[in-house]
Amino acid sequence: MFQYVLRRLLVAVPMLLGAMSIVFFAMRILPGDPCVAMMGDQATTEALADCTKSLGLHRPLAVQYVDYLWRSAQFDFGTSLRQGYPVSEYIARMFPHTLVLVMASVILAALIGIPIGIVSALKRKSPLIDYPLRIFALLGLSMPVFWLGILLLIVFSLRMDIFPLIGGGDLDGALHMIRTGEVFSNPADFLAAVGDVLHHLTLPALALGFTLAATVSRLSRSAMLEVISQDYIRTARAKGQAERAVVYKHALRNMMVPLLTIIGLFVAIALTGTVLTETVFTRPGLGKMLVDAIGARDYPLAQGAITVFTMIIITVNLVVDMLYAVVDPRVTYR
Amino acid sequence: MAIVRDAAAPELTAGALRDAPSRPLGRALRRYAPIGIGVIMALAMIVLAAGAPLIAPLSPSAQFSDAVLKGPGAVERHALGTDEFGRDLLSRIIWGARVSLQVGLASVIFGFALGVPLGILAGVQGGRIETGIMRGADMFMAFPTLLLALIIVTALGGSLPNEILAIGMALTPNFVRLARSLALTIREQDYILAARALGSGQLRVMARHVFPNALYALVVVATLYIATAIRTEAGLSFLGFGIPPPTPSWGNILSEGRQYIKCCPWITTFSGLAIMVAVLAFNLVGDALRDLLDPRLRGE
Image (cartoon, each protein chain N blue to C red):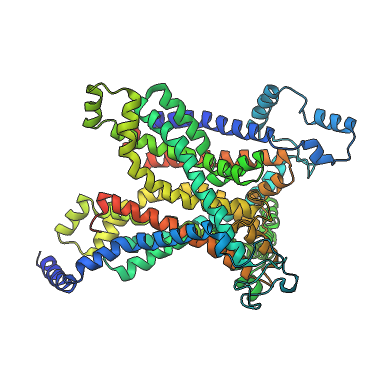
């Protein structure tokens, strides 16, 4: 087990380095000068030279590259050209918004997708049940999250006025209360802040959760189909167990093991989904920050955001791999 | 035991009797209906894209100042309404199919042409070549498709060829992985041994034996990736990094219409619907092909 974990860690490090290298060199070939983007076309040559020096862009590329890797390892991504303050600080402020959205949508996807997948597999010989459920999965898979988001906004925000059109709610306030301990001295305010966050979170989480649920349901269906064709299920049936007991005691438990580890991977997929979801709902977060940074040619901010995205995805994959080794002992023998 | 026998027997008999006459037809319908529907939808899209100049009722860039932001049917010549410049939405959506389909097909062909040879080489050759290719693919796979395409298209600039290149490159690692795993299985087959015994070189084995035997599975996945590519293109255009306006693409029509969702939801509704139908068509074809070609699913 230890050897397996070590091996996975050793594979993850060069992967992360490689991914960070791609980010660095991609940012260097972006059109336009960062200093011109920051100071405008009217800036004097001297001012531009000063800016280039202060950003360290006058140094050889290899030096910049090593410096970037070293700083990134310490979560120092430089200073945002547009905002003027440290990128890591900005990322730390945006991260909770994205985390909340990812968690809510993954939970929602599991709650909707897993039961649908199971029922679809168990009732695969009943077209009246299996077909609508499979159509649901296909529609969810084909529906772009940004379109679903807009439809939800049209219906629930503009027409019915139930949910807000933009924003992420008072998450910063709620987190501040937790940090300062105000949550105990002023629980009513804290609950109001949490309520506001949930109010703003509902539509984005629904949009992202629904599109993810489609994939979860398809994976659950195939996991269930795989399990119910196993010999131990046939044995359970042969010894006279009721179908309900076969499903709940044997099939469901065995199917959840691979499925729970797959759900981990959905964190990575959901994270990508936040780029579009946060843009549609004009919601603060890493995804919207990345799109805004690229649009405004704020290279340090874009570089920092992409690096953090990549770090999270590689870490989640690593954790999932390890989780898989924990639940399935055969993996350790590979 | 008695309980099992008593419970199962009537159900089997009744089911068998009830299904007996309609079974071949029913099975054929269940088997071929999804692929039929998918193929019809995909063909309709190809016809729309190819025949846009003939099919579109108006020019996609023609502006009608007397019909700005008119709803579907409000003005006779604009069946799906107009946008903020008075341009005909139906014509723009028909022309937008060209961009989606071009990007969808060309980026998958690019990813296939680059990824499959690399994957087969890795699988058949093994050793350091395999390690090098696979670590490279893993590195790119750390980025989700949209994110990688976003980085590449930002670096190169938003245009049709760049979008094809960006999405194609983002899809390449997926083809590398799949082709390698197929090659690993195929290289152990007896016919590969026979080919080698007859004096076939490595290149001939890969081109004449491994590739043709991996082709079915690769084509199925490629069909599903067309759907992914169309969705990614729409996502890029929606974020403002795709084909720049005024060239119509479904993503940029939807993005422009976003500002008018309060008064004129038809712009976003119809353009989004077009994206969904196109993605659905290729998902249906890919799914159905996989089900048809996977022997484990026969009889399901």
